[in-house]
Image 1 (tube, rainbow, N blue to C red):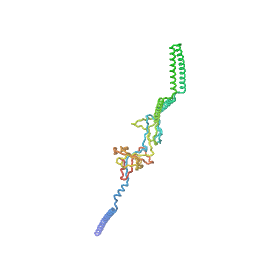
Image 2 (tube, rainbow, N blue to C red):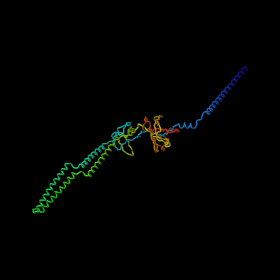
Image 3 (cartoon, helix red, strand yellow):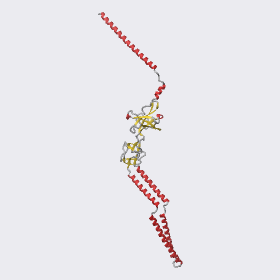
Image 4 (spheres, one colour):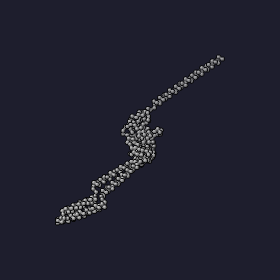
Length: 377
């Protein structure tokens, strides 16, 4: 029994020694593997070629810079507010939002019966002045000339009879047959007849003569004044027809038929807003720190929250000449409103279709350098 127990104890000790040796061997193998791996990494780093400073600059220079700024979409013609030069009530508004319009098309009409009556009155006045001028130029009618000539002949006959009677009375007075008083009576009758004859001759000369220069000039001036008044009345009447100034699209309808509109320089009251949206533009607020990087012809794109990550491409077509306050507000609490900006116009590709007035984030692709902030605010 004792020998058997001693043998089992010896076997247990042998097994314990074997397990301890196996663990030490595993640790040694792991340490050796770690050292080998570290050596290979260090060797590979030392043997790998280091990039030169010029290659780093080349890679950095290949990245284009972006000039970011908030913008707003507008037609290439900008928004055109169509209003009335006259105050009044709208008789009709002939278009709706989205309608295509052409230059000179009547978009709306004011109540204009009173203006039309003024035109008709001015036309009548012009016709009256024209008749007066013709009368001055043409002078008296043939019947009036004939009547004046008849008066001359009649006065001449009376004068000749008075002269003959006077001659006879003078001879009788010389013979002592008649008195001086009777002779003087016939002399006075002759003087009266002679005066009537001269008056008839002057009247005939006036009727038969051409118009005087001053009479004709006065009649012509009256006619010109009447024509000017007629043109003024026609111009007022034409202002009751509100017409389109461009070929474009109705973007907004501010008034309906029957509503009143006013003409005020301090409080504009447009009837319609139109614009040529066949090509769209974005008016971009470029920060004053980036104005030196903007050039005509640079590529640009815009994004909008409503369209996700979609990019709408275009190019810079106009760069402002004067810095000014911001035009577009982003509604961000941290936005600085005291910064100066330079207005820049980006014309989008003809295929791009965006709503007028949409706020967007614009990115102008500049020259080489670091990429600017991805947000325009």
